[in-house]
Length: 239
Image (cartoon, rainbow, N blue to C red):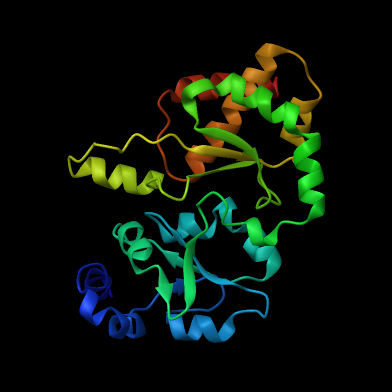
């Protein structure tokens, strides 16, 4: 299967034929599935083929980025090969259907409703406090429309390399442009975020904001710069 994916990346002349041959794991079916089979299962309102890429199938299946898609009954392709973050954006479409990564900012826009917009306005001051607390550790902080259970997740802008791709390229000695900051999304309905909303204490704000970021990084398999600091913050919050 990997040689087929490498062909999708490098063999433009045969890309359409290779698209029919390549197989993926999925959140909806056992075993392997094709893009054609995925298309046949798309819901009536679905506008794209969705995938999630990373370095571990087990980790990807547990990713908070899947929560909204699971709730909506939307299938997501699981792409755990290290080259998937290079291949899938290069492919871009299957016929006339866009292929979209769920870890991109804006991927959830077609599922937003008026309630999300109102909540975003109401929680805008809280989001600004988190931004201030995290400073240049993140590119932005946003209220999430994709989380239903987890307190936070990280995504990247449409034109930025994913965190997994950054790690992969760095392992190959290519560091130029590979230090892009993540976007932190927070779940406005989660108890941890509600606790943050209820406090004006700067120290508590800093602890919760940092824990929200570090938890999201850990879930994505990104090693923390200072694990001891994370533990200390967690202990203070629990205490």
